[in-house]
Length: 463
Image (cartoon, rainbow, N blue to C red):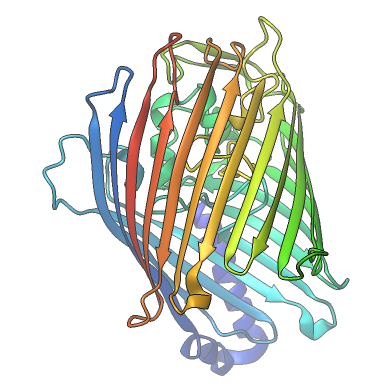
């Protein structure tokens, strides 16, 4: 796949040279721009309860990305970016956290972006084609940039915004390279935890390497994922309809609408409401069949039958006033009947996408079959007070039945916070402190409680 993307990039550049001469090609390079991000990430997790109560793990890594973008000529440009993560052995780490490095705690580097971009504005249309390795985001597919390196894709995307406030997109996604966060789920491949959290059932897949979409999902090559999406947005209303057809796996239809307005009693208060829905059905060869990896997070065997027929809906309501925003959200998934395969009524998300209103920072059980979840959250931005600081807190609860794939009825919860600070003394520097505190994240038997206290300190410098 890397050779294919490199060839596409090379052919595009050479073709441009034939069209407008070496002098113009030279200017594209000389007037191009370098950009990127340096990231340092420390994570510390101490388990509470359950079989891992005595486990305390942490990791420190340094990496980021370096990107070079050619200057556009008649709308044609190209870019390439190298992503890397590397362990810093500052501490005597007895148990390393896996989510900052490659699979097997390895340092690694990957060509995360290598694409051609063609803006057709000069032809009288607001149409853009982006072809090759890239960061790609739709509701059910995305970078999930929660640790050191994001998930990236080989994608061929066309967007159009000729109609005011409306954007259309069609895309063909051929390959995925999971980011470092994938390693938090890799030990549980085959269970419900990865496939409802944005990752894979396939135990042989590793982070930092491109795989055909079907190979990444279930170990079988497929025709990739075909997306069609339309979105509308103006000052007070937004709507989105997106369809991902994962060939020989499942079709996922995502719909969302939202509105905001000025409060009649106080024009400075801006209430908002939004609803979302996901409908998912098996298609083609239904390759989720024959998925049988040894165990899920609780050590229980999980076997897929390939049949997915699931529905999820959620709603949230809230308001903003000055720098304060607060909301509450609720969601439900269709419940499995006794004896159903755990996949049947779950929402399968294997490519980094996580749009749910009720997701926690780590806990993503809202996509399990038969789950009723709710979340309350608030954030405050201090910028109006002269400090470039923002804070957020949340609490989420996940009420699951015995047929969710864990074999026991329980209610999991997670609370957490997020603090972001941008020092005035250093432009483009972000200091970030996050914490999450799940309880009953996994419960093999009634009454057990596997949770943890986790803190993350992140330094991002963009240039």
